Image 1 (cartoon, rainbow, N blue to C red):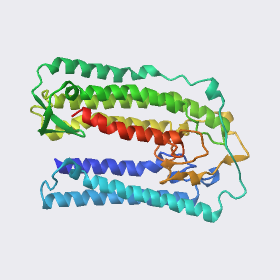
Image 2 (image 1 turned 30 degrees about the vertical axis):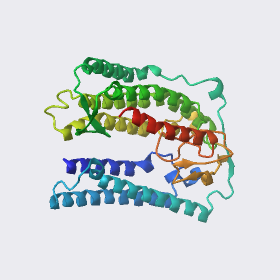
Image 3 (image 1 turned 120 degrees about the vertical axis):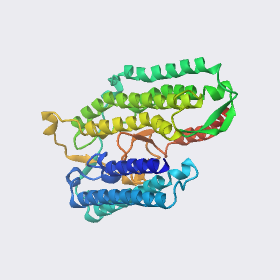
Image 4 (image 1 turned 180 degrees about the vertical axis):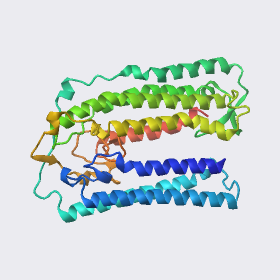
Length: 375
């Protein structure tokens, strides 16, 4: 079973590494801001092709090495953390390749002066403050129903639980490592679901009020598409929350030693079944990204927007972005959340904002307390 787990993890990492450059807008190849006229520059196109070949080649090499190692030493892994070592190593290698492509495109932009002679600027949609985008909150109902179902099963099962319960290591369950049955340990999965169900709508509300990611070269079109993007964003978030709650429900059934997940079904298939809803959520996110796109850039333009012209190009601000467009730090920017350059429809926090470090410190203090409370 470790071999199958490794190969599945390697496949997932390879697919994500290959698709990551495709998730960003054409003007942000590998997290580098380029003028619209250079989105199809030979340097950009060539780097995309080289990156794709290298990621696929590394994935094939990692799979081959894993198969050979498994045949030479059956079941060579001792713990779940070690079992995923090939996939983790591959993920690190893919990240380094992404960073290398980022540096090469940035160097080409500086060397050839892509922004020379351009008028740089920014644009804003003031209507987002006065005319809020109406979000389809009923999409969160499935996540709430799964939470209520888990709580109902837990209440019905609590009286018949054994004196000790198995321990969860991620999404795997170790029946040999057990903890004393208490109200907190028994209903920890329900608390996790409640936190997810409460935090995801709050986070969605905050993100939809964050500074919009608009294009000064197409101000009207990018503003309309961004509003449509926000209106659709709740659906994959709500679906992902429901899938996460379903995964926690399946994990809870194993912790509560409920058949068949804790009975005749072997641990390997049981863990795979527990992970299945999360895999479905990832697929839903990818479908959303390839249909709607980052900040809605894949949505079709109206005839008026197709003919839209502007003397400006979006301001070049690469100096504030780090780690290939995943980390943002700007002390002069009052925004707390900004749309991430790399990684599709995601946001990142401004590390130059004092509130970011306050939140990080609070989470650092609260996380050990939460883990201790569930033991």
